[in-house]
Image 1 (spheres, rainbow, N blue to C red):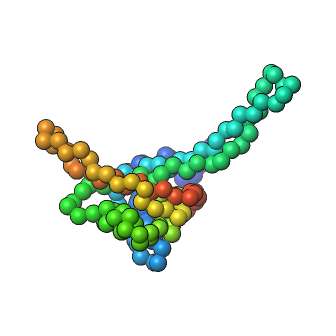
Image 2 (tube, helix red, strand yellow; image 1 turned 180 degrees about the horizontal axis):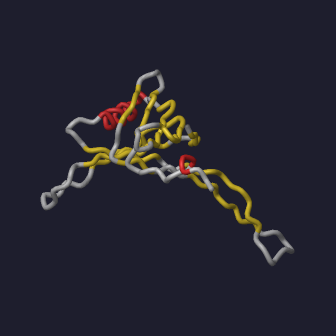
Length: 152
C-alpha cells in the first residue's frame, strides 16, 4: 500500500510569486493578481513528397514562446508602466531573467518557470465603466526568448 506522505496533491493556483531581474542588477520580487502565458509550442511543417500520395510528412518547425501576461490592481502609480515607458524611450532595459514560482499552501517553493531576455511588449489598463464596481487592473505582456522549468 502506498505511503500517504508520498502522495503528490495538485497545487492551488493562488499560491505563486514572481521575481524579475533587470539587466544591470535591479529588480526584485512582486505579487500579481494573475500570471498567464506559460506555454509554448513547436510548429508543424507539413511536407508532401512526390510519389507518396497517401501521406503528408509532419516535420518539426520553429518553437514559439507565448508572452508572459502579468495582471495586478492599479494603485495610481505603476512600476510596470514606468519600465515600459523607459524601454520605449530607448533605455531598452531587458529582464535578464524572470521566474514565476509555484508555492504550496505552506508558501514553500515547489516549482518554477524561468524566462530569459524579456522585454515589455504591451501594457494596458482595464476599461473604465461607471456602471461597474470593479477594481482597475493593469496588464503587462512580456515577450521573451524561452522558458525553462525547474522543480524544488
